[in-house]
Amino acid sequence: MIAWKYLDKTGATIAAMRDYESMRAIINNTPDEIKDVYEKMSAPRSAKLTGLPSPRNPQAGEDKLAAQIDKLDLLRERYSSAVEYMAWFESAWGTLTDIEKHILKEYYMTDNQKSGAAARVECALGYCDRQIRRIKEKALERLSVLLFGK
Image (cartoon, rainbow, N blue to C red; front, side, top):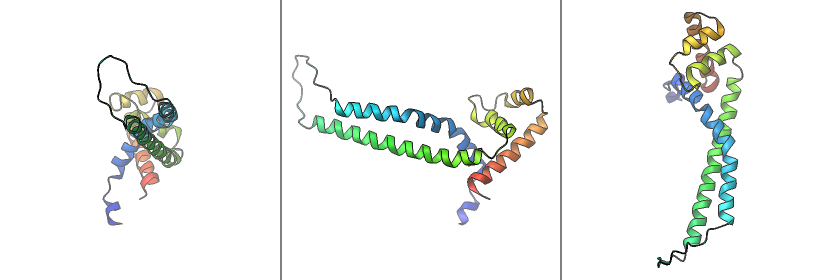
């Protein structure tokens, strides 16, 4: 496919690394969110007694149930996407060396991504800036090929 040739694979690889923590959080939190939705579906709230007349919607219960079903579908879809992402990303990530992973994490996967990443890696590994840059570029290129192909 011609369009594949023009894809910014390096940028897409960096974006995939930055999404890792979000996907991990989705996988960890979604089962609890699904459980909460099921609880809301099985125990609908009763009307609040305020003493004031309120507009009566005979389909209010059905509307709430339909909204919960929609939310449940969205959570399941988001969860399956996150699981698919993890299988795709972690298979490529696992082939990198520990040093390559450490450098890429510091540059692209931490909260303070670029500020001081080189200094933190220099202190942790004892490498010079030039060597770190070389390892980072090779690791990024290798991960890009593993994720998206040549």
